[in-house]
Length: 94
Image (cartoon, rainbow, N blue to C red; front, side, top):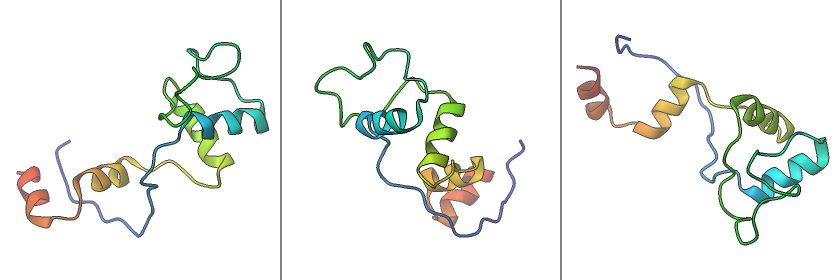
């Protein structure tokens, strides 16, 4: 705060969330801890394609590194959520 312009280079944000199936593969390959709500080492039946939940920033960071990616910065995340509409961005900055 206060709102201020930030210049960003090119970056990519995956349009799909990390699913329970994706995260289980990461856990199986790395031995990383599972989310607290998973019982007996896995997610509840029928939720494999749901986004993984109850992971910390550190867990997400470890997953991203394992997947050959990185977490977006705050500015990148905000731009991805808001879009490139300059008029809308200017109104938001007021």
